[in-house]
Length: 542
Ligand code: TNX
Image (cartoon, rainbow, N blue to C red; front, top):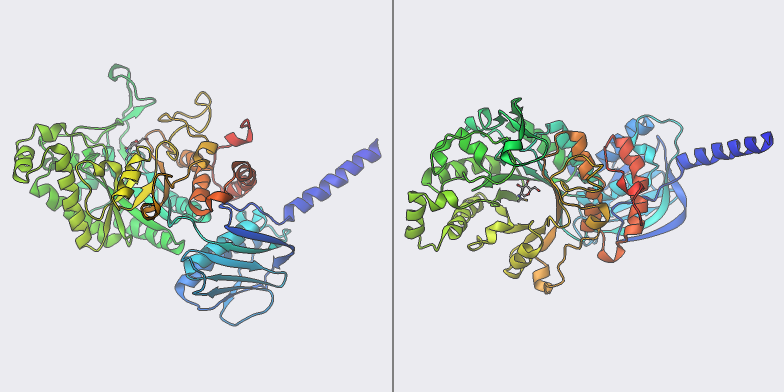
């Protein structure tokens, strides 16, 4: 008996030790083509990174993995332009790799070769290497790990050019440090867009030099709804003053951080609705003149920007600063949930409708967005708007984010407009992901991991030309009920990983059972990074 126990103990010890250095195959998103071979490459302190051209962008492409090696393995790899035939990771730019973000990775026992058309492709190849390394790569200093990478041949490229997540920092503010951590997680999953929802009724979060009141007044609210949104008599309030904002210096820091990880930051400045925080700071931009209070309640509010010359001047000045700050080709201008009540009762609005020969307030909203679109275009940028911007006629170069299901996106694509699919029927990450009885309070809905994963952003009803307008997919994290960063993480992952795979991997490669297995293995990596996540799939019934 004792002998048997000893045997079990020894066996456990060895399998445990082996498991610790076992090369990994947890890849998320799953690559387009992968062939595994026998053997492995081992990274040691003498391994070099050879760059075909030693530019800052190429250095960025390899920096993340090299930084992880330093903290996990205790050494950083030497970067050189001197060619090598062994013990090196050779990164080459090669125009024959067809997709701008694609890469070819060949791991052989003696040498790793990584080729891509652009440094961004090299970066994604490095993220693949990161996930091929033992999970301990995400942890700090572990001297007993063998840094092995299994021999593989991978050819990989994204299915969609736009792969992102949105974070609402207006309802609950999250620090720039957290935003950087969030960007890390996007990049880890080969996502390339961070949509930053910076303004809403409950707070204005971006410093605008010309209008200091936007943040002095608009970034703070005096009370916040506590618990669930209920009938007025039953509401409970937390009366602590709440708020915060990013200075333009903070934003520059975030942008530099994102750029190094090949993530484009798309800023959103909401108009004409979701504007109570701005109207509290500058009530003259409303139809009634106010006064207003930065909202502490969630929902849709009647006070929106009034389409006066003064308002357009204000918005153009705001957008000028935003355009100067953000390198993104896109500025998101919101456009959603703007009730028309104030415009209906406003003499100026009614006169403007007449003067411009518009049919109604919906066409007035379209007039509003078209004017803004023209201005944004004059700054060399393009607008994105939520699907309400379809109502009353689309602005000429607008890209549409389809959020109320997919129909807005389908309409827009049929009108030859670009579309990003973010339907609340599949990718609203503020919705419940498991049994509401045991989950933290949420806005509602029910989108478990399998459901998010099941989404195909390419609607079957589009013809080939229309299909080209589907640029990609984005998950949205609205934060009415998400007050802490660890809760953001919990809502974002693993569902964000399902969105990443949907955005990157070929549709025919998607398989939920396989994804789920890889996902469960990925959890060790999330633990290593220090990332909170929902574990519901561990107990999910098949
Ligand atoms: C709708 S999605 C909104 C947001 C809310 C969200 C909650 C969209 C364009 N508007 O203002 O936060 O629902 O799920």
